[in-house]
Image (tube, rainbow, N blue to C red; front, side):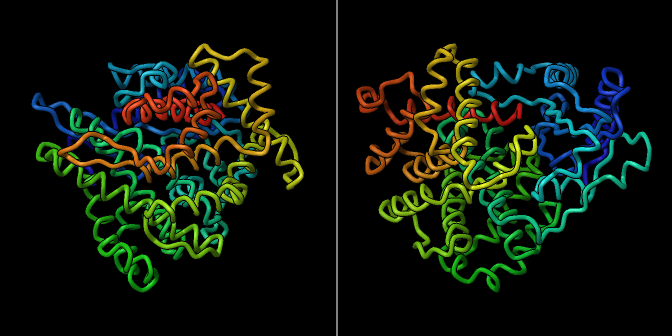
Length: 448
């Protein structure tokens, strides 16, 4: 539950968002819904000395319309709503190039009524429509169009994808960045929301609320995950503690020390990597050790390279449904891969100003046997495994992985010559290079 003063601001923000959307595109709107932490009222915030409240979660909004809105209209709507609610707002496109601070904004997505029935069974859609948080409803009849998603129909790979996404945030927001801005610790704590999502999806105790998911995991962890409980003793307790910290961040913020920041980050790194290995074993019927030994990680990496299409299957389906390319078959994978790289390198060109259209085609053809998202996930997995962070030392990367990381960077950032330059880059520079790539990919996904 929100405290009274935050509840009042929540209601004010809700009304402002509704007013902006209905003023700009009201003729098209059938319903407006909160998505994510704002829908559950589990968003993070802090109080400042002057009594003001700063929210640390973006506001995710879904607009259901009678016809699909174009991307430019959505972008303008997103920026207008963000500027009204955040006086320090930086355009998402510019922020993707900065990547050095938190940027609160209103993320608006749109779907038409007729496309609701095309939504695949995924966790995010389950959360939205299982317990819809409605800001505006034109007619109650629209409720009958909301998809009824069964938790048993959601692929376990969806939980794995959430883990990979949060691993990317751990790399980008490592402890040496967070000590200068403890608010960024929120992005590390999100690792535990992904862990509890993936594990409760696996044992079918999934609930929409993070608090309820954490409670369910606490009750079932040792019974349903005996191997994981041996490798990560106390995981369920950490999940519950760190999710409480995320949801009630205002209670913890002022007392967080430098050592605690490093402790939480290192906990998150270990827990999310080993949980991911556990799920890889279960999903693919593999038998890898539940540890981060470099040789073990390297073997898993090579395995994932061969099985990436299963990891990203839901992502591929989403592209096909969104772009109406056609039915998915294994024979169309090269075409889908090519298309994903075209999207990525086109966004790369817009952000960096580099690459010609000929280069975009050339690099996309060269990588046609890989998919950009799965390839990025592999880089995330190995780069996070290589990171070493302690309060008394500088950021380090395990050199055991250097040739693998160098090769992956070269494909994702082709304007650099990593064969010559990589050895001259320190760990901070390498992580900064990753952050740029990760932001470009996020921007690509954001606009899909």
